[in-house]
Length: 307
Ligand SMILES: Nc1ncnc2c1ncn2[C@@H]1O[C@H](COP(=O)(O)OP(=O)(O)O)[C@@H](O)[C@H]1O
Ligand SMILES: [Mg+2]
Image 1: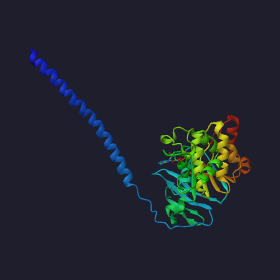
Image 2: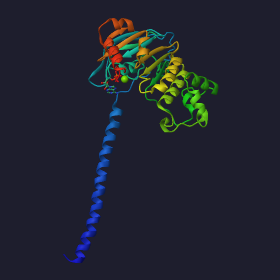
Image 3: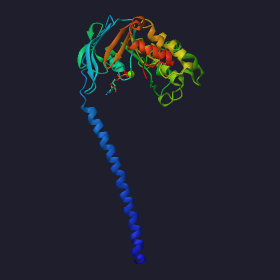
Image 4: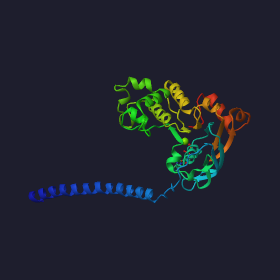
């Protein structure tokens, strides 16, 4: 090959390489776009929930789950389940992971609609309530808490923007937050980093409890709220939960043996059904799942119900 041809070849190979490289990049980008469009289509195609309810002001807060069956797609997750939850009582829900505990709580608050049966609150089907008038009745405390990139005070006030600073401080004190908030550089006006990064898990959770105390809803749902909290933080967290749950209907997916032991009723959920139901002493007399769980906990030193 002559030198001139060789130079032209080298230059054009570089040009071709850049082109091919770009094409490769675009093809992977196209795959991502394709996936995102598919996802968006999937979401848009989900049947819309009928939320044309009335503004119901319930007098009583008894919850009844009546022959409820539910599946996310084909597999039945809640299977013809019925339970009566009287107001101002504590119901502990225990069982192996994947049994349907969270799903049951979500159905009670109408995050999803049941396939069969119904859920009633104060004697009325929850579908008769407008979303607002239904949601007013519930507060949730989850294991993972999301806080907004805003001041601590506004995070506590969330949902009650008209609340005064005194009310915010009162809720924070009840939830054992006041002391650590006062230690922050700007106290209640400290802006929390993205996703609440500058606070520990237990602190974030106590802020979410202060928020729930502020809301003062009659029904509190705690989903494994004390799981993954280090022992140092646990005492304060338990104290905060006690303040939140006074005189309320409590549904707790429980992690700690002590809170389960004191519950008015315990539901052992297994494969979407109630395998056992009753108080701690009653269930300990049976030689069933619950007793085996408790014994396992006592020998292993860790609560194995929910992991
Ligand atoms: N959003 C969802 N979509 C599809 N399947 C789900 C969804 N949430 C939970 N599941 C499935 O439902 C079953 C019960 O889950 P869950 O109610 O979270 O159980 P638990 O709280 O007892 O661990 C599990 O098999 C889980 O994989
Ligand atoms: Mg769960």
